[in-house]
Image (cartoon, rainbow, N blue to C red):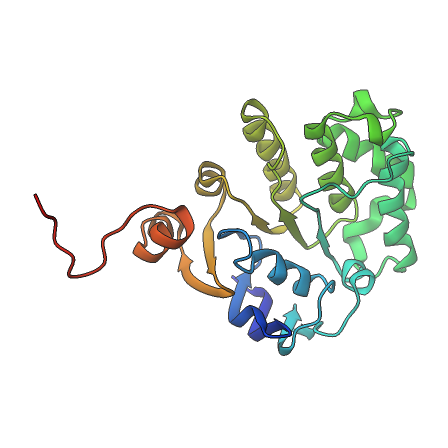
Amino acid sequence: MAVILEAKGLNKSFGAVTAASNINVAVEQDSVVGLIGSNGAGKTTFINMVTGYLTPTSGTISFDGRDITSLKPRQITQMGICRSFQIPQLFNSMSVHENLLVGVGIVIQAGNRWGTRNAAYDDPVKAVDAMLEQFNLGAYRDRQAGLLPEGTRKLLDIAMAMVVRPRILLLDEPTSGVSADEKFSLMDMVMNAVRENKVTVLFVEHDMEVVEKYTHRILAFYEGRIIADGEPANVLNDVEVRRYVIGEHVPAAGDTAHA
């Protein structure tokens, strides 16, 4: 499978604090990659660099072979890399339908530069109505976004990213704030949408059940570094991941049990 996103030697420092250290990642097209790690481990810093919200101190990021390291968020969105946020970034005074139209507007301003992927945007209202149906938001079409339940706000935030017809979708804690009863139905809906539209996904998540169920690959972050990278079963059983990410007590090599 072709590599669609690649980070090489990526570093980010804030004064004396290192938020990302020598990140090297190649993401294959149509894959679903989970990013795990404790708060402050570097996951969101990585996403922020990929989407242009932070500029790396050093290193490069390429998308489909093009260097995007110094591009701004809007330029990156218009190229086809979109994201949702841990706290949904919605226009609270606008309706659900109007929020989605904002996303379509980004595509139109980009000059439809992604070819046939965006043919539906000849009719923006039709494109938005299709997204409302795909994310089961039709009943909320005219509801003010600021009055929606948290799970529905999450879905709308993700739908706003998907209405742009991205090639890569980055999600920051998609199930955060969502009830245990809703998290799998939300993720099922999102994964069905990305499969249907052939979108590559990277998502930050603390819920290991969600990570294990929906990813093809996991990147485990610790203190700004990637300490494990591979298939879910292998990464989640890695000694360092169990110790530093999952928080299990794992005896160090050479330790012996005492009666």
